[in-house]
Amino acid sequence: MARLSSRKQDALDLAWILLVLGLSFAVMHFTYEMREKWPGVQPAPSDSAALFYGFGDRQFSYRNVGIILQNAGDTGGRTTNFKDYDYGIIEDWLKLSEKLDFSANYVPSLAAYYFGSAKDPEQVRHLLDYLARVGNDSKNERWRWLAQAVYLARFQVKDQQKALDLANQLAALDGPDMPTWTKIMPAYVNKAKGDKKEARDLLLLTIADPKFHLEQAEINQNCWYINENLREEGDALDQNEVFTSFCADYLKSEQQTQKSAVMK
Amino acid sequence: MISFPLWRYILMAVTRDRVIQLLIVMMLLGVSASIFLGSTATIEKHQFAVAAAATILRILSVLGLVTFICFFIRRAFDSREIDYLLATPLTRHRLLFSISAAFITVALILSVVIALVILVLSRHLTQGWMIWSLSVFVELSITCMIALFFSVALKSATVSVICSLGYYSLARMMGAMIGILSTKLEQGKTVHEAVSWITKTLSLVTPRFDLMAQSAWLVYGDGAGVQLWILPAQFIVFCALFFFCAAFDLRRSQF
Image (tube, rainbow over all chains, first blue to last red; front, side, top):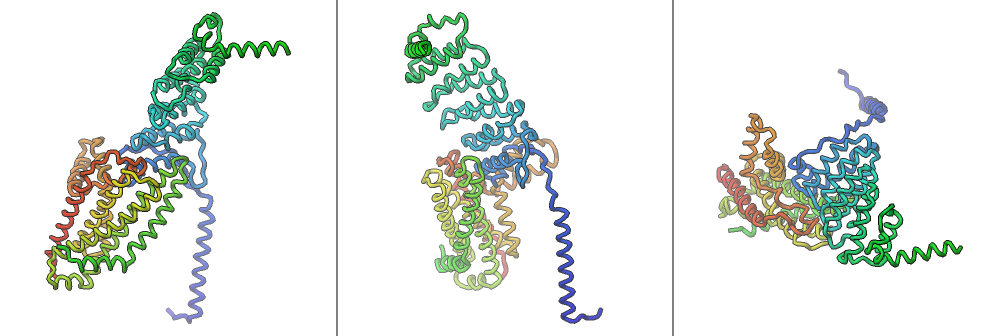
């Protein structure tokens, strides 16, 4: 093969570079819109295999499982509707995270506020038992996850019996920082179920029980709730000793309000 | 038993190769990456950053130490430094012991740097932090001895680095592998039985790094589930094991 002059060789090299650059642009042009298809939430690994996510470190594995759940289906400019998630598999991932770290709030918050915002009640149902388990703990305000489970069961899933079971679990928890509303949560759910007597009885018991140390404003609020929402024919509340004595203030102010309304 | 001039010479080599300085820069980048990763979490961003930094800093240190040790030892063999040192009254055991002591000193310096960086990041001086820092030192020391053994036994620095890192990964994952074996999902199959036997045999000579340096101790500050006797026990057993293996190999080498 004849040897080319230096200038011709440079020109030939440049031509090759331009040709390959052109090919590179062509490949980019055809692949630009191509995206990897999201295969859906992948099955959760066993808890032993999950340690690979954190290179043997359980806590880092937990954080990585959390970030996998948080970003599932929403990476690379892609967004995925909740209806396209398999919540059965999400539940498996949630159970896995429980085994890696039971005390953290990262994954419970994703379950309660992120995955819990799905519109399909059957999907949300998958989250209830997980939230109930992690929330069955009076330490570090973790009972809030159980309260969130009650909310989801009551308003999203609309399974009042499930909501009542969870509310009873919440009320049975004994923590120093648990507010009174956690103790009377079953009353609200019972009202939604249509069981007004149960709701009334629980609220009156709570008002009368000195261990709750209710302030007058809280007693008045409960009296108002009973009076406005839980009255029914033959309830005999006017003869009820707890109602008449503890709600005397509220009833008096209510009578005055009615009187002034009539005067006007 | 330690030859202090040799110990000081190796520490000078560490300074000359700017190992510590480079690792400190890498650690700063690692911490930045951890803070960024933590910021992507919806809540508990700080805990995420601490867990990520703990893992990233440890891995960076292992990469730095293993690379330095393997290339340093091979270079010492190739440039006849080892021959020269053995021509002095130093015995082979004393030579190796001094080199080991120097590498463990480097591991100690790196552990202190990592512990301080994590302390600044986590902002809590807890019992968990102290146990974690101690276990990082033990892990880095054993890793130094693994790298020393492979670099003495193998002729290529690159192969030594790959083998050391492979063995380190195996040590970190050994707990997970034993866990998978104990689930017995595939029990009865010949392949499973063979793999199970190989893994169990390997676990006899593999340190359990998964029991050490758990970032949960940093996040919760209490060192829950740790059995402190494991740290000195693993340090003594595995440092000695790899030291004697390296010594056995060095003694058989012809110069």
